[in-house]
Image (cartoon, rainbow, N blue to C red; front, side):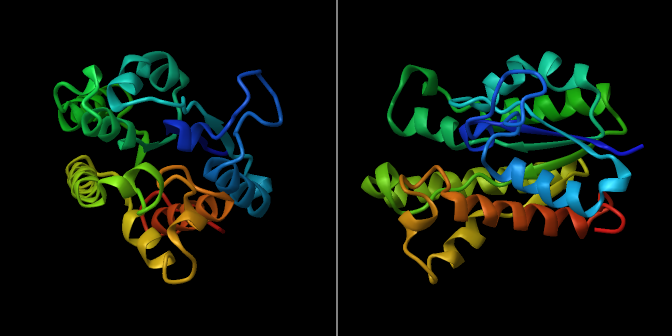
Amino acid sequence: MGRTILFQGDSITDAGRSREAGANQALGHGYASLIASRIGHALAEQGHRFWNRGISGNRVSDVYARWNEDAISLQPDMISLLIGVNDAWRIMWNLPEGATDRFERVYRHLLEETKEALPNTGLVLCEPFILNAGPPAERWEEWREFIYRYGRIVQELAKEYGAVFVALQEPFERATSRAEASYWMHDGVHPSPAGHELIAGEWIRAVQNSKLAFPGL
């Protein structure tokens, strides 16, 4: 019996996924689909299942608000979470939803509740990221400082809760030595197909070097 792997997050995870049950496009066109394709093909005999419940525009508080129905009730064997850029966006642009910075406290509460309800579920926490293109380029130093801080928070939470941490900011910055920032993210936030491939590669590498590794991959 294979594992059930759940991908959670915002538009980067959503990636245009279909909401129709059983649709071929249920995983979207992003990194979740790429990971499922690689693992599903290489380990077809093991019967792993992949679900995507990412929703465009979500902050960590939005994800937590739907966590019972979109995570805990599904009883997945692994949960992968990529969130943070919308939290930063609301604060950077002085929107009402960003009146206070709830990122760390809500993220921690979400992990505590998950550990309590699903003690045997493996967790994969992905680092939020941006590049110097599109709206972030207008206030790049402020944006970079914000996202770097969120990345450190996620890394520390991963250590604290025994989760796998997937570093993404530095790999994306390295990638700009090969092609300009807009090649990887046209607006500095949403990855291109090449950007999603980068995420998928970093995700698999991090997981395969952890206790959550897929045997035979």
